[in-house]
Image (cartoon, rainbow, N blue to C red; front, top):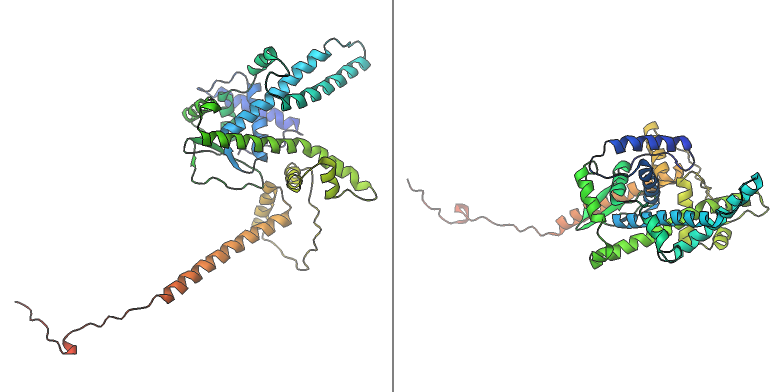
Length: 357
């Protein structure tokens, strides 16, 4: 995936990204992009989803969730503005009160829209108006090409590889797609346009599973800053807040807590404080090796110490597997009985045949 800086906390990086997207959109011939703002919004949201995904999931799951997130944000904005449009704005205090009321309504509508089907809260008219502002198939494929995502195909299903530090390969033997070919992107956009109800049962199950997993991970991503802030506020207390306190306060499972901490380290919001006693031995790494360890630690969201231990563990596992394979091969060759064949000839008393001239 294309290397981008932290867009959420760096306005200069966001401005540079917008300039790159404008240049990318001007060289696109076959994909229909309504505006660069639509493409920028899709790139930011899709990048966020790929960074928190730790599996190979159908691309339709990403597309459905991205449109659902956009629908919730746009609809809540419309409804909140409708609620606060008659509030006065004559003084500074009234402007602040209107802004506070807008934020309160916006949060309430977002929670309601996420828990109800489309059109039940906002109505059919608002739902139809918002639907025309959502990400299209062409814009989504352009965002995939701009981010240089690893899109592949297995059978009739297209997949996207996640970029989380905890990534686990789940679907092998996939055929990668050339994302710099616009004909391929147009074919992919046509596949995304197919309704889910017209797809096979296996593909529908995988799309639903991927959508639910990404939605759960995104909820943890949204909750992550509040968890980190609450933990940092408890560092100055007489009894610092522990993992058990954090899980009880935010109603998190152990898996959810570990996922949030990995996301926080990946975003640079938290560092690991090891409670294990370190070894008395000290080691000096080669400069090139140290650079690779630091790069791997940054990619996985680990500390350099943990990344080095993980790399060494994987290396020793490969070495042990190779030794076991060699040992089993040598022992298998030793167990095969060697059959000696005695050649009969003139020395054993038999007369050989005369050679014809």
